[in-house]
Image (cartoon, rainbow, N blue to C red):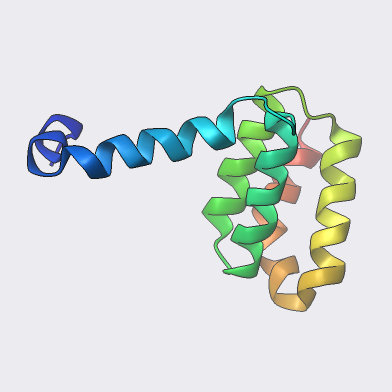
Length: 98
């Protein structure tokens, strides 16, 4: 099912998704790179490796430095424990390649 199909089925859901995407991906009171690092932490808490990696790539695309990402991952480790470490593994491997 493509976006056009979803839009025809439930245009309000698509509008809400687009609104949510804008809230996270655009600078506001918080820069988008920080909001995406928050999304990284939330993905780690849900043990979603792809969520962490995807949010990290988004943060990089919006100017997050390696140091900022390393510090964010440290905070995730402290707050999330061993499972958060596992969820961040792929993101850390990507970061080490940079």
